[in-house]
Length: 198
Image (cartoon, rainbow, N blue to C red; front, side, top):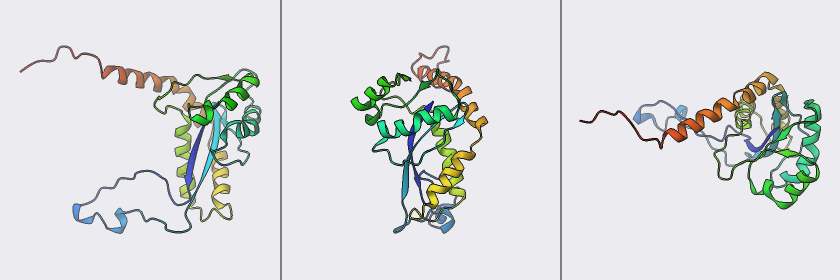
C-alpha cells in the first residue's frame, strides 16, 4: 500500500510549463499563465493505492495531522476496500510526521509491516504518478471554488475514476524503474574505458 501527501491548486497545476515562442513574444498572453490575486487556494490531501486500485478517501484533508488520525481513519478501511488480505506492506516516506514517535508507535501497535525507506532518498513513490494524473483530470474540469467544495467534489470523483489497471501497471513496473535509476546513478561514477584520445 503506497501512501503520500500532495497539494491540489484550485486554478491550474502547480508546476512549470514550457512553451515554444519567439523571443519578442515572451509576454504574449498565449505564452503566459495568469495569476490569481483573490479567490485562489488549494487543498492538501493524503492518499494511498495498491496494485488493486486507488483507495476510497474518507474526506480528511491536510497533512499537518497525517499521522495517527488519517492513518487510523483511512489505512485499514482502504486495505479492506481493496481486498488486500492479511499480508501487505505499507509505504510512507521519511517526512517528520511519519517518523514521529507517536506515528511509529501506532504502526507498531497495529503490527503493520512498514517498508523501510532510506533517508534523503529521491522521491521514487509511484503515487507521484497518480497525483499527476489526478491533477490533470481535476484541471480539465476547471473547478471554480473551494468554499462550496467544488474542488473537493471533483477531486474525489476523479480519484475514484483512475482505472485499477493504471495502478497495477505502476506497481508492476516499479522494480524496472528502480533498476534503471540505480544503473544510471551508478554509471555516473564508473570509469570510462576505451575512449579514444586525440
